[in-house]
Image (cartoon, rainbow, N blue to C red; front, side):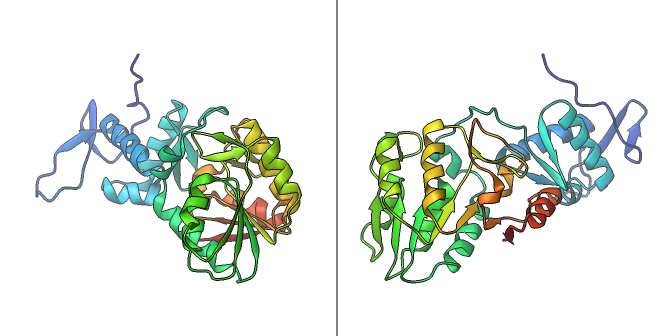
Length: 286
């Protein structure tokens, strides 16, 4: 059954007594008016394609007030269609078992991931040993490290090893059982290989980051490998775009206290940012 999103309409844009409307911005001098419900559906379309929406940008795009947009987002949130955050909204929270493929993840938040990767690469020094877990953000980091001349990268991601093939970077692949949707290697072989190694720095990508609960992933075997990575690395840096905040996946990797630093984009909720900083975790916003 279709859900009615037209309740809670705001003042100031009424054209007819029973059909309050707002205009899309157009190049034509006479913009076509649309119902509040249509605007909310358009917001959902934007959220699907962009991965997040901001109140300020929506107000400008739809030529209406921020108050109106906030009420739109609250109504969509009440219907379970979006997840309301400070300053905007994210897609409705996925289930704890949701485990999208690497190809699906690559389509989301591309610009944020590239900025995160550049920031992460700037923190790497020649001669270091790094661990990169599987994921699209860590794959972007691997690409940003291709020009290093004296660097060792340990990874459980087959696609990351392939990205670094033909470069001067020394690559150690953990071995293990292949997870086809993430191109990652998991299981006791991967865990045992990692336990025999030591690394200066771990860049850890995650599916969920609840600042009170910790870092999580939907796959139990992946979480076990990630936990060993945290154990053998001298410094752990979480690398994730802001859409991962406020989410919990099935399996806990580690609590926030295991982190020295987080690299994320500026869409991170301010309340989460405060919690991280109060815990003494360095946060780099890109």
